[in-house]
Image (cartoon, rainbow, N blue to C red; front, top):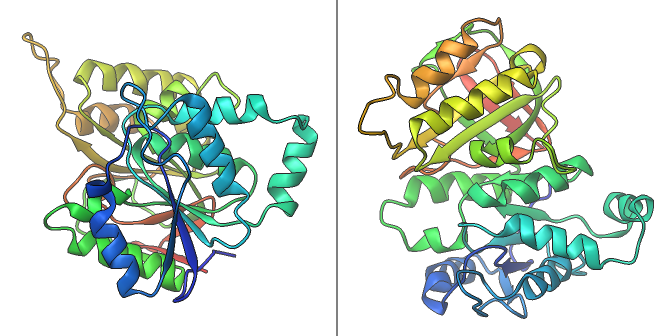
Length: 306
């Protein structure tokens, strides 16, 4: 069952990647107060170590603090960037439990709460989903300061307060269009790709895979998609949802295809349904969707319900 947030609940903010300032979280704090949410900041939230929000150890301590928080119903990630994989590895390395006990703790003893974020947070989503935790691919805290945030915020509020997500995609380009229903996993394409050979790899077998990305060279997109195809993605997933492929770059000698074309040309060899240009990811509107739980496509709406 999806975790829902209600007035009076405690929510916490952590930073697993880049450093954070008080200004970065100011608009979020005002929003939380307007919904009668109690906000706790992780102990090392404003630490700075080079580009990171404190040392690997400090970020790992804050992640463990959030996971084991006795009352919080939601954990908001402050921003993306790079560093979440380092944070998770450090936390797991410092734990004294063997893998079986970690599995038991994740599945039963630790109070489950909703982790919210996207981009670099894909690492956390994948790890949490592997233990049966449902997480939310949604905005990070510093985005509350963005102009034109209203549609993103409306989707986020609907998700966390009602446990529902719905998006009309009937007008968007598709191939092999047909209804589907399966667990949604994934997130940032670069992270999905880079996690392939790790214990945190995303299991897309018989699932719906979400992919989005920002600021990549087009030949990098092709290399990642060629690798994912070779890894069995298009032969084993139920469907693919392609979010924003934003601010892609090209070389002096053009690659020849844009990001959507690259994915379409590979996907067209298979019978798997693919929906393109879904407003999820590094876009002015970043709709929220739950990962680690079922998503349904009825030919018009992508829907999730608790």
